[in-house]
Length: 296
Image (cartoon, rainbow, N blue to C red; front, side, top):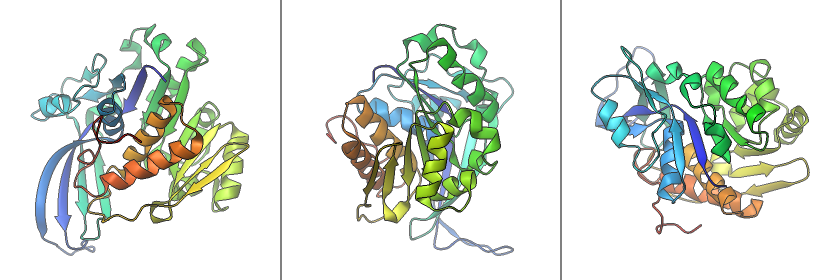
């Protein structure tokens, strides 16, 4: 895997540590408050860049106090095609984390959903080997998947997140038929094909055209699936502090493994390892390794 582009959200994460989540009409005290860079796609882009990959980010920010903060947070990611949207606010996520490291999130998309694909040069996709879409706005995803018509050998990985899977299978079916690598958790898998169990659900998605699938199962590990192969890897025992960004880190490990030409078992292990590493730290990117800190 050579040149990679990543599309999706770049957000400011407002992370609130609480002892327990408040019930309806109740109030709970926030023990600590942090503002950190986030956004699923931006996390993946930064993670791959830290490991030495050439990564372009395709996303949008607004014009407000956090714009410079978000752009600076992209580190060595190529930001040639980030768009600044007039009279819009950048995306923001309120993240509540309890003392077990479990989280709930409330997302304000802001400028993220105003990205204009037609402003990207027509020949940009011809230089790509890989395109990763993470929690994209569906109309934008449709336009980016169309790049396969210009470059059929372009490999597309797709992490729809629950924001899209809760819409059900029908709106995503055409995209899934063109997806080379799909990332889902068990809840998202159920959103797409119903409560049929992991094995039958995977068979359904392969029949739709998805070539390779990674199912993240939290404390139960993860599964890799293709039409001819199924691999399971258990989770690693770590002290979870904050689960924010664990799925993004999993994708970083998997995509990095593919870029190195690793076998699927080692690719899956890489995803598990980086996902576990991130939950030991507060924030989606704090635990993402730099090149030299993790060799796979």
